[in-house]
Image 1 (cartoon, rainbow, N blue to C red):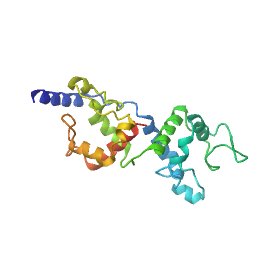
Image 2: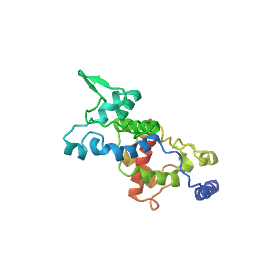
Image 3: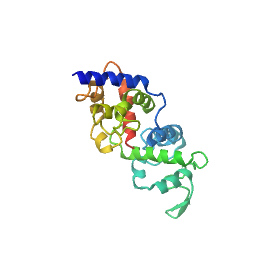
Length: 220
C-alpha cells in the first residue's frame, strides 16, 4: 500500500510538472480537422455523401465509408489533388469519385493530403462513432493520460517505467476496437484494475466522450 501511495504522489508531481507542449497529433486527428473544414459539407459528418451542400447542389458525393476501402494511397492522392486524370466508363475525369469533386492541389500540401487520407481510412474502417469533440479530447489526453499511455498513445508513458505497468496501447486498433464506447467510458469514469484511476468527479461525461473520440483516432 505504501508503494502505491508513493506512486500516486509521484504521478501527481509528474502531471503538475509536465510541459504544456503537446505531442505531434495523430494523422487522423489532423485529417479530421481538414475534413470538417473542406469535405463535410458535401460528404457529410459520417462520410456517406449526405452533406447539406450536396443536397443544395443536387449532387451525389461518394460514400467514403465504402469507396475509400478499395483505393490505394496513390489513387486517393490523385483523387484529392486532381492530378492524373482517370478514365471511367469511357469518360476522362479528374477523379474517381464524382465529377463535382474539387481539385485540392494548391490547397493541401503533401502532409495534409496524407492526414486527410488517414481520416478517410478511419471513416471507412471505424466500428465505433466519434461521440465527442476530439480537439477537446486531445487537450484532456495531454493533461491527464499521456503520463501513462504515452505521448502518442502507445502505452509507454513515463509512469510505466516508474510503476512497472503496461497500459493499453491506444494505437492498436485490435485493442481499442474490442471495446465499444460505453465500455471505454465506464473504464475511464470508474477506473480499471489497480493502477487505472477513476476520473469520475474530475472529468464530466462530455469530457470523457471527447477523450474517447480522441483515443479512437490514435489507432488510425
